[in-house]
Length: 176
Image (cartoon, rainbow, N blue to C red; front, side, top):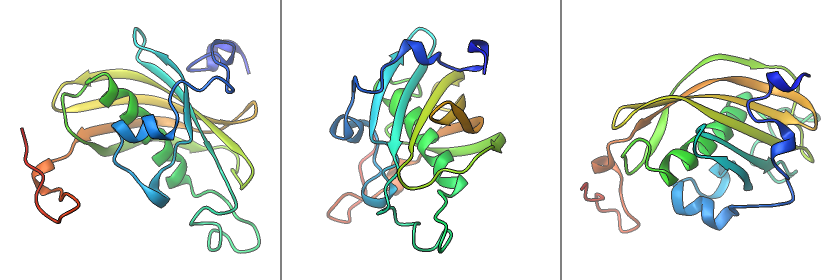
């Protein structure tokens, strides 16, 4: 693959140099437990609106037993969720949408090119295409295992109505 095909050239980041671990990711993303689809962030470029992170796929993922028995394949929707969480992390950290919580708003032109299985490290790169504060962020994304693109496409994030979210006590979260 030529360098022009990468959202972020791999020579710009080092997977062993974590800039945000799971604890930092949790500061910005609400997903917990089985729905956490990021392990670490390794690159940010605020000028371009680009970010790179990864998900270490283990044999303990909730989908392993059933997707597919005898041949566990990471569901494509989970690959897209990982990309959405990376985009959300970046957008929330840099207050791009001016929203308390960002949710999935849509997908376009998604292609699944190869399988992802337990033991793989799914590296994800996202780059902002456009942002309308308080309305929507649109990003292109790529997912890699080693040097192979396994998924790519465009995703959209939208502010979620926090007045419908509940806190740990089961009470509505006040909106500000």
